[in-house]
Structure formats: C-alpha cells, structure tokens
Image 1: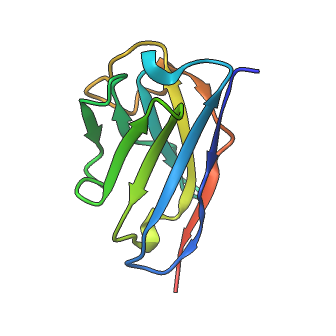
Image 2 (image 1 turned 30 degrees about the horizontal axis):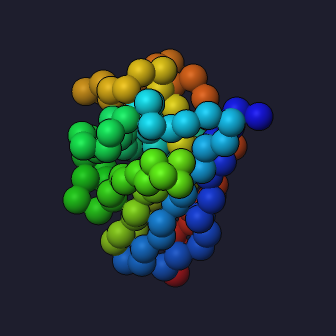
Image 3 (image 1 turned 45 degrees about the vertical axis):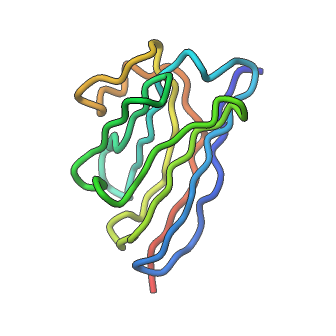
Length: 127
C-alpha cells in the first residue's frame, strides 16, 4: 500500500522540541520532494517546509524559519521535521505530503502540487 505516515507529535512545553517523522511505504521517497504542512484550529492549512528529492535544497515559511529543520534519510525512506523553540502558536495538526516532482516550489503552500498525504499528527505546545 502506497502511503506516508506521520509520527512524533505530542504535548510539549513552550521552548521545547519535538521531532516529527514521515515514513513512506509502498514506494521510494528518493525521487520526490516532500513537504510539511500544518493546520491549526480554525485556520487554513499552511505550508511550512519542503525538501527537494536529494535533500540538498530546503525552504521554510517565515513562521518557522530558524526554528524548524527538515531532513531526510532516504535509506530509511523517512523525512523528519525537527522543531525547536516551540511556541503555543505552533499548536496544530502536522501533515507530510509527497510532491509529484523532485523539486520544491518557491511557494511551498501550493497544496495541489502534493498528491499523497498522511493522516497527520497532533502537536500541542502548552504549559
């Protein structure tokens, strides 16, 4: 079955860290750009990061730049999102998605470019 599954979400205090994982099965991630998105309650889904297929080029939304890092281990068929210095406004359901090409767009919020989505993992930042 072709799918991606996110994990690693949870409850964390402000200033804390989490690492999300996006594990692929049924296909190889090597050839695809991967994006991370999030959706907070009552808000539209937001593109926050994208990694080209080789991992050598990444981009980030301004809201997470300098705090979040996307990486990939193609040997494990997994993409990660390291989230540091978390803030309450980072509370959201986080999704990974597979793009139908190797390269990220400059505008990482173009959801229609991503054809395969995971079910999401909840991240709650609260004291």
